[in-house]
Image (cartoon, rainbow, N blue to C red; front, side, top):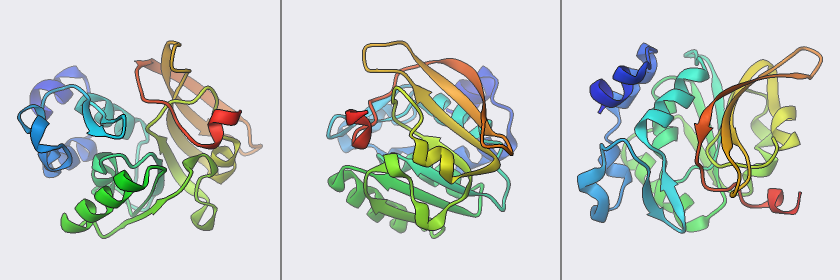
Length: 205
């Protein structure tokens, strides 16, 4: 998977590649889809949610340019796979899942795999996790039509964010965001993507 689907498509960050080699993706998919665990495609994980394709996980991780001392907030735990990948690279991961059954399952799996530097909770990720802010990086694994203001506020000056932007029936773009000292944002469009929608407070925006 790493050699033919990720490195071959241009991912060069050694930390990202090593982490994805170390994390057993088949542990994060159901038995029904285990034969496709290492295919470069998203897979259903229940509750209308998916585990992202490996290349997109690698691309988003690489774009964050993580350091060993970084603290990262993830919005949308899902299966827990992205959080596990991040945990091998940075100091601390804080991950939020809005669907209780998925949050509970991911929590147990991550603990079983010995990912001890991940804090988890079931809540509306739109509001971030103010208790542990500010964060060096934020990764959002579901698409919204805008960046939630609480996440902008909780991102450090100089911090990086990767998030898909776009509605369910729109072309979504994966965006890289950097926060300036005056609170303004610099954004860069990376590529078109297709993510499940961010649910919660964003539905009323």
